[in-house]
Image 1 (tube, rainbow, N blue to C red):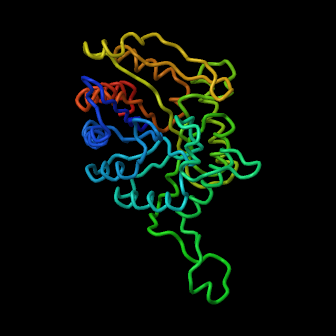
Image 2: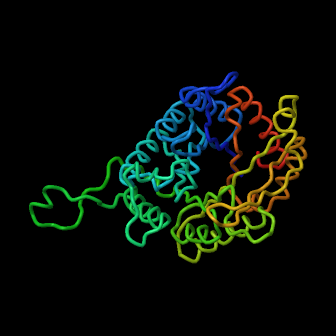
Length: 337
């Protein structure tokens, strides 16, 4: 089992803030990646959101994190393709992967609701006739994946002069191995199956849409299994990877108790998102042994290859290093490390 942190990178300019500015957040995440590697984590992953006081432009930060580390993955969970030019994304991803020595784990998807009602339009992207944003994102994903695989996507002047209509120029740079490290963020059973059919890895969402009343981890385990089955049926080579995210906070200090103790014993949360019933899982709060026991009983965790722990990044580097050390002990209790 691989473990990593997943961070929104929130910052707020308020009295007493440990992460008051965007610069604070960016620089601290470089240090957090270094500390994560030293502690024994396998990955440092970032959430990407636009028009918010959080992380929006992942590749400069991922490259800086990679430059200061040697072993851990640097990843995204996820890049919202509604906001992306797929060919420029392909160039950025390949360059970052080369700088990291092949450690980029790039999660992409249709994305979740954003602050801006017209954000995609402000970035210059609009829906075609009878096109949904899911269609839009999947179309971009297809072009992006063809580009990083080295398929020609543009026509040279030479080809044009000789009347050749087919593209003959691939994007540059290309990074071998990157196509096998693309993850699709899926918030429904159906999108998990689609990711498997396409031969991508799966980042299962922190909430599931169109939930059926069963516990979150049970529904998510079904999604992961269906993803793997779809991958195999489609005839793809290799072993598909699945990642799940969990908010887990072992209590080993007064600070832990003050920040997270009140969340102990919480259950699934159910609500409405974009007009559809949605369910998310509980927070895992308690002693090291309690958190280990809760993770051991989680069917989706058992079905996954990678567990990403939601980082309370606004609490700063030192507290989060302590939090990661606690989680490493949990991982050792479970036999993961």
